Length: 537
Image (cartoon, rainbow, N blue to C red; front, side, top):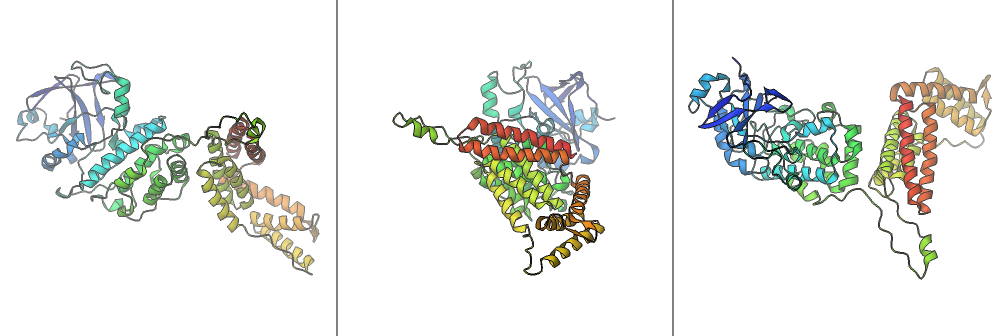
């Protein structure tokens, strides 16, 4: 019958006594964590050490696990691969135990690694500081670089398979005196271990001297390269998934990224390697907080056609900073000169790019993208220009400048009147606008009729007034836009106009050297944009 242990049940393995641990949230139940291939139980040794017993489901009980454990044992000394220190229960060495519990055939005994998985951090939207995120990213990158330099690859990197011992809570010591999160010096030990990671589910490891599995892993949802369905089992198999994980970790210190996260992974599995909002958000945050080199490596992986096109983990380690530099801040003001106090006071001080300002800028960028999709290019251009003001002083400003340049190049110039034939030109524009209205092409009709009204207010032809047709077309275009792309409604547009006023107020405050007013304007813009979103739903 299936292996269903109870709390404190004794298992004798290689002469050592182990007891089944109780679940921390349900003391009467055995502590087991079920995965796709197996259930992992926590065991306590007599000396207080914790072990993991991985009991595979029937289809995954493979005799080759014995040889795999022997071959991978030397790698247990590498950072992140401590679970390679393992014992596989086999009929030759553990006959007595297996006769009593047949379902333990080819089960694996290995070290227990405390701490949440990266997937748990994502699901809980757990807030981490920039230095914590950098430590995790460097820890993962270092482990993967050590592996890659030895021709090894995990082949199934994903959030559930990355454990974070440095984020484990420190609990009271068990009978053997060992602490779950390290030593009794909780603060110092946790700080030292923060960058540690541990990779689990290593049964599909690649190495040049290992036997190729019968069923190759095809990548995990949210981390699978476009080539992954063909099977992952090569030295470069981890490069794409590792790049996504490192990017997720680096970006997680930013509230914008945490809010955008899909669920078990940052990206919806359907949008991996696609141009999507989540990619824009994460790439932008990487650029802002960690620099162009880091953002470039992530973009290189995202646009890659093959795994070999992605950066090596050695390249990632070189690009990652040693310490978190934090958000963009203003330079410290020089002490006023006693000889020229009035002249010193007239010089404007640089303004800090606040989180509120960046948040508002990103909201404006997102709004501009929706307006572009709807065909409202002039409105989109206005949104981008406001975003550039709010992002001034950060690397996001450069990205906005590119969006503005691209949009300005795409906006067609207003048709110029032809000398000597103004009436004919107006009639042509008017008739084309009426025809577009009849076809239901409301946005096109609005563009044509707006040009007619601009050239000659009050224009009428055939008993139809251009102004009336224009207002009707705008109303119809607005209703369609709201249902299709959630463009801002009438109240939202009013708020957007308010954002424009605030965006004008911000540079004025900067020019006057009034940092406090500039920060207030940025905060008010972010709040106003939240109202735009609410009125657009």
